[in-house]
Image 1 (spheres, rainbow, N blue to C red):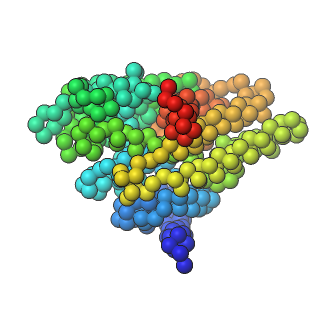
Image 2 (cartoon, rainbow, N blue to C red):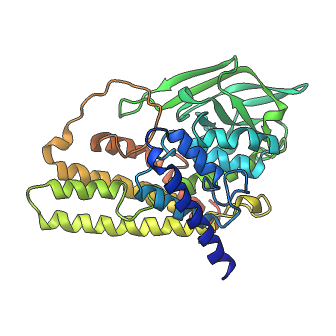
Image 3 (cartoon, rainbow, N blue to C red):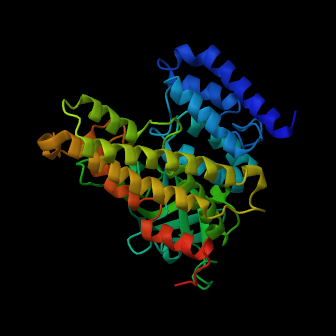
Length: 388
């Protein structure tokens, strides 16, 4: 038996035991199920043993996602998307042993929700223009600045923050990453209402916020390298929305088609084209997962640009699918229940209704890097075009 097949066998055996022993109680107590998943090494299979992983190839995570989705078991990706999909990898690669032990399990069971404090009004696509200032004060850092478009900041216990700590250094070299307690004095959160009526996004103002140096992630001045790990893995995660063929947005489109009394051949042709695209994107996401370096291999082997391809394809396809869903609904596709503002504690397109998912999908080509930025990354780093 080769090493790869042995790894796959290990993952499948762990999965079988997890479902048998904990599956029946998962809906009643999701946190207990996620805790069992973490302890079995099935949180992120490429993480070290004892930290939610099995030290195997990251591509094998698809075995986990497919099985759990097929079984209808609860997912933590909508409850703590930044923690599970982004912060965990950043801490896993760049965090101290104490940070890993303190945060990885608690974020996976969603006991503590995370947000990402990167973007600013003038530093979204151009992240190196971050102006939030971090100044050293003995054993602490004092943070001042404003972050924008912060998902679930109002529900978060912790935030992954990028700040400028050396104004004299070249702009890529003067940044540092921190873990910020969102309940610290000086953190003010203001909702940003979206076109759905929801306010899952926020503006976060930090005024004289004290952050212990023990909560610094990576070396001071090496925040750009940490941020690139974060963004590369975030894009791969955003491109991997569905693990099972025909699930997710395209599954919603198929259900709407099946509910229609007429079976217009033109609409059927459009549905089949979208279904094929959805399957291609799902397989692309699986391929990209195989290219992401295991956590144990970084930072010696930094993440490549492949996640940009999956993120770009997934975001734009989801918009086209929900456009088609409204077409299937006919005149009722123009109706919307309420624009009354609410502040959700979960994010996600599925389970929110087609109309809201259509509106929410407009942001998919902006979050995690706009489609224009993704095309620039692919043009320069994959196709070899000259830098703009």
